[in-house]
Structure formats: structure tokens, C-alpha cells
Image (cartoon, rainbow, N blue to C red):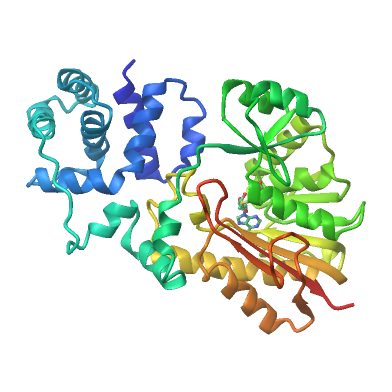
Length: 408
Ligand SMILES: C[S@@+](CC[C@H](N)C(=O)[O-])C[C@H]1O[C@@H](n2cnc3c(N)ncnc32)[C@H](O)[C@@H]1O
């Protein structure tokens, strides 16, 4: 069916119901209206959900909520004429075999178009959920870790520019031809994400790599010697592995998911660098790697709260138990892969999140249990004693980086 509402509905259903990655789902979407609807609805999810619950007294089944969110979003934020919304929603309901619900949907759309748009008062338990567009337990974690600055951190979620770096097959001239307004950073450029940039990325001349990810890889390059045997144990899709290999480190790049190891291989080949990509579970000890690496990098799976400006799906389907389970997995990974660091070698831990449960507490527990490792100053301009917590600021992502050295 050729309808932006229907196509957006399909993407939203997958994100909400199946928890699939938004980035993956959006790869095949080319229609701008579908993109606007999907991102717009996710950006206002808790607000739209509150409006639906307030206007539909008898409730709405989960399967149909995304369609109602789209309709309300289109009226309120895209100024789409009511009759256009009603037509498209009607067609989508026909395809879904839910034609009987047309009058119910019309009633809600009419009320919103007529100016009814209930929002929670400050005293309402949903107030902060709606204000920050995330479950209240997540707001609670921000408050706990950043009691004085959480509002500022939570408001800095819009990234107008993307960060890229030039690969060995590309040149800065090509980058500036694609975006004359490119702004240089220590490790790349902030650019407008236009078609020319995405073509340079497609041809492996330039690559998208967040500023903080590039900085973390750069800190390893500054700490290691050329040819250093390096294990990147949670490596897919390969951003940091490729950076390290490009700068002369000898990289073994692993991930637990075979299809994601495929992503590392194709990314390395697109960027024209050599590395060895393997399937390996970082929680399971591998005898042949004991004491074998000069550098072990654990860029562990995490809640991704440092990248919610770009990854609008990370806040959904999350519970506090998920964060605790991640923290346990992170501890398991760092404990296991630390045994692959040779005496005198480096262990680097990072996440793209901001919670102490996944950052400081994980490395502190590790250091307490492993007196043969100690914090090592990270060779970056940022003041640090071996740990840096970057906070999102509208450009930079939230990112945690920790460097440790094993005693000789
Ligand atoms: C934060 S991402 C890594 C991003 C990557 N370093 C980059 O820069 O492109 C974490 C990765 O860890 C992988 N992962 C999760 N559990 C793992 C495990 N037990 N062993 C190895 N990799 C794992 C995930 O599949 C995911 O690709």
C-alpha cells in the first residue's frame, strides 16, 4: 500500500512491539513524510500516549496506538489538514481489517483538530515522562547521578550536525566539496548530513563516527605503539576497530553475533583496511588469548542513553531490571577480557551511556577485584585520572571512557 501513514505504522509497530533497531528499519525508507512521521512520533511518544489515554476513555489496543499517534502528530505538529489525515488513516484501517474503528479514530482526530490537547500538570505522575520523553525510572537514574545538572543533560538531545572522519581512501578536499561548512574537530569534522556526505560514506571515503567514539579510538592510538596487538572484543559494526587498524594497530575484531561480524568485515573492506574479524563471546574465556594482547578494548553493550539524540528508540521497552542486567554483563565482560591483556598492557573500557551503574561502578568493582590493574591517565586534552564521562551537549554524545594498565 502506497501511504506514508501505513509505511510509518509498519516501522513504528516493529520498534514498539518487537523492539527492533530503528536505524535498521529506517535503512530502506526513502519517503520524507514517512521519516517525519516516524521520528516525530517517537520524539513525542509519551506526550502522544498521554493525549490518547486522556481522550480515549475506554482505552486503545497497543496494536492500534501507533496509528493514532501518527494522526495526532500530523494534526498537531505537521499541520496536515484533517481530511487528509482522516483519508489516510481510513485507508490504513481498511488494509488492517479494522474499518469498524474509523468512527472512533475520526472522533479523536476531530477533537485534536478542534484544539483539545490535554497535557499533564506539574503534579501529575506523568509530567516528567512527557517533559523528557522517557520512562520515569530513567529520569530517576539521571536525577540520582546528576542531581544538579540532569535537566540540562536531558534537554541537550538535538544533534543538528553529524560527526564524520575522512578515511584513507578519501580526502579533506572531497569532504569540503560535499559540505563547505564542515567544522574541524580534533578527530574529524562536524558536517551537515547532506546527500553528498552520505555518498562519500557509501564509497568509503568518509565515514560517520561520533566525535566521542573517534576520541576514544584516538586515545588508544596515542597510548599504543604501531603494530600493537589489539583485541576489540565488542566490535560490531566496527567503527573503532577500523580507526585503530587504519592507524597501524594489528586488530582482532570480535562480536558475539555472527551477522554483526559480517558488518565489521564489510565496513573494513569498504574503508580499505585490514583486520581480522571473528565471532567470539566476550564473557567466555578463550585459552589461546590469555596474556596475548598489548591492548584490549571493551566497548561494551549498554543502555545507549548517551546517544538518545540520534537513537530515538533506545528509551522504549526498557526497564530498571534491564539496566541492572546490562551492568552485570558489563562486569562479566571486563572481568573475562582482562585476562587477555599481557603484563604491562592496556585495558580500555567504554560505553555510550551516562549512568554510573554502567560506568564508574563497573570499573570500580573491577579494579577492587583486580589489584594488578590500575587507572592510567587517558592521553586526551580533557582533564582526567583514567576516567572521562562525556555528557551530551547537543553536538557531543554522552560517552564514558576508562583506561587501565596491567602491572608488568
Ligand atoms: C556498543 S556496541 C560496539 C560498537 C563498536 N565498538 C563500534 O565502535 O562500532 C556493543 C557490541 O557488543 C556486542 N556484544 C554484546 N554482547 C557481547 C558478548 N557477550 N561478546 C561479544 N560482543 C558482544 C553487540 O553485538 C554489539 O555489536
